[in-house]
Image (cartoon, each protein chain N blue to C red):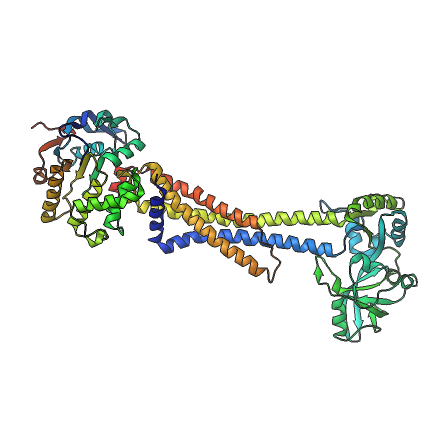
Length: 404
Length: 230
């Protein structure tokens, strides 16, 4: 079989109807571009969220109230209530102190209360997440100060009414003015601003810039409660996290019931989220792959039309000695040229699209998705080209020559 | 020219039958045809429409196989051949000339003539040279790059004859070659066939036109699927 003349015949047939060829390729172009773009979006999202979670603070052991199964994302009724409100949490500051004392792996422990309050300065007010915590919070949470200072152990012990503002809170209440030393109201109580955190931007579910931080003791006194929402513990290296979790669990179990608390680590949360995002990426890619399938059906459709239109030509070629395999090859080549052409154009659109969109949205171009999309488009051409090509190959030369 | 020495048996049919089944009814298109054609002959097969002459032409042209009986072409028993083998025989041994010319539109005379060669064993680099040679033989060496719609009916049929000649076949099979031409062009085409025959080519005409058939050395009349005795 002479492939170069066959290729020339196929190219000539496609050239004689350029707009039809282009429209047929459009299905594959859109399919391939969509696969590349959507996989980029899914992976971009994964990279972005993973990075944000890592930024929250590394090597963390987190104690949450109630029973939570992070891997299966199931929350007991108690844990939901505990996350919603401080009142139902059984965790206390003493637990943070106990684990700090009894688990040597922990370098720091931080107890935290969470509540939402109106924060007011003069006529400006906004709702902020108020975090009650201890003096070592910034170390564990990896949130440095832009100006002023954080409160000290002494401030916590004496439950002083002092506050450190998130960047957005400071900007909304004070504009460009420095808030240091100013008096603000959190709920009905006056506080003195002693520091402002550096701007960090929204990180996953938590926006540090929207927070107001006060001593945990002050928060408890104001809310008239002695429990906390969560405890963070920091270990020296990620390898020590699982060992620390076991020990923390042991220490906590002496004072608390098993369903009163859950010890989780960032890694577990990360792997759970990243597995969800992988599923999302695959389903996005799969959805796009359906359009590739539709593109393949478009190729099959136009190839069937082409075979019917060229019935006489096929009859002639057979009479002149073309074997069924040669005819099959000729039409398969034509279908594959359409799908490869569409695939290559689709790759150009998909790659430039994801590189451009990366400027406004986190996109990570994955090279395997480009290679995969290309091979899938070749396969689509072969798969959907086969039926029309077989039909051409099976034509009876006598009938085909008579075809009007 | 043809690689057969004159007077050797080129084509032999013995007791060839062709039965078509349509809606459960059998129609006998050919009913025991036996004939022999020697290399270098110029034969016309004639008959009214429905006589079976088209079916006979398809079997001689290796486009179809008989239901019963044997067909030998150039010593090969082609009646037993597979579709694939028949394609090769058509390519190597038979040159077709059709009533409708059957040239590819928007394709130059040269490319049209080269068409059978791309299905042959000939080296690709030799294809153009061979095609030019064939066009030269029918006197169209100045029309190599013309498309069919730029040629007259007679010229188109000459291109088709060149296409039939280009593989140097054992047999040229022409189906009503002058049927679509005016009488002057028809005469010219018949003259080309006469010349080719004088150069040693074996030619079979299939026609219902007695005047055209008269150009041949021998006439085989078909009626109701049988050879009519003279």
